[in-house]
Length: 317
Image (cartoon, rainbow, N blue to C red; front, side, top):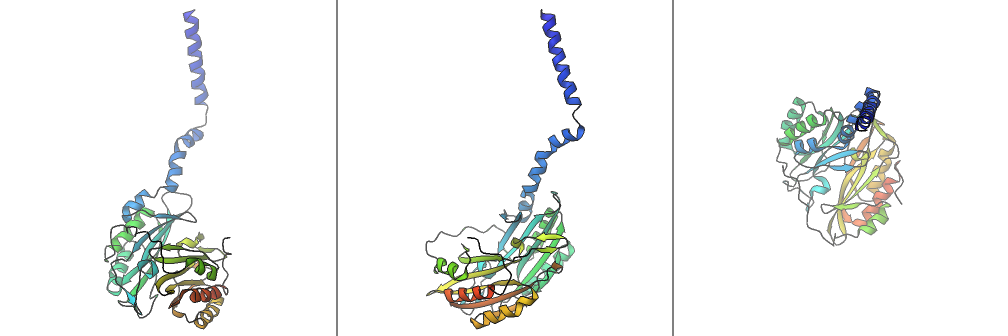
């Protein structure tokens, strides 16, 4: 009886081994590699380490890293500009081709004039392209320049290059600390949202609204999500008595440029810059920066009028 039981057990074991041996090698490899492949698509830890801070996940599978220039004390027309209004360096990454070791990156570095050439030199030496260099504001003190960058390849190597460039500046190396919670923003954001026809959120003491374009933007055969810098940005910083300083940029096609200028000027908003940020995007885009410090609701209504001259996505309900 014991011998027959042992024989039956051996037969079952041999049968199991034979079943496993006929599973195709590709299926076995897939079983082993699938978990790590899935992880690599969402794991940005190595990039976090290179840049010295965690990124935030944005729509379109974009990972964005922010470097507020809290070291700068910039004023314009008596307004002390908060980093979230117009002094925020950033770089954003998106994986390409479904692989873990390739990504496209785009960014915007806020620099003092004395920092521009050291940063450009470092980026050129490390394979990151400069796509634009210009002002966004006018008459601010000290003068600030904006360096737009682009790269494609190993995201960790790109992050290392950006980090090396930032060490040529006085950009704070420590991640920004969350500010104290405040129940009072200084401007009624519900009224702003109603006047704009768009909702935003308060970040760093600034009400920020993002308005994506209706049609997709491509570069080098890749679709560039709005969160990588191709959405219109409208920022409000309260300045007291229902007023706000506003700045940001409209993202426009050629036919939209002058109708938007007219709408802004009719509402008392200054156009401070008009230029490109990228080199080979499709459709060709122009970025129009602006400035005003006036009644916040009035300014929001003017911005809403300007948006009406653009092809933008419908507001979310």
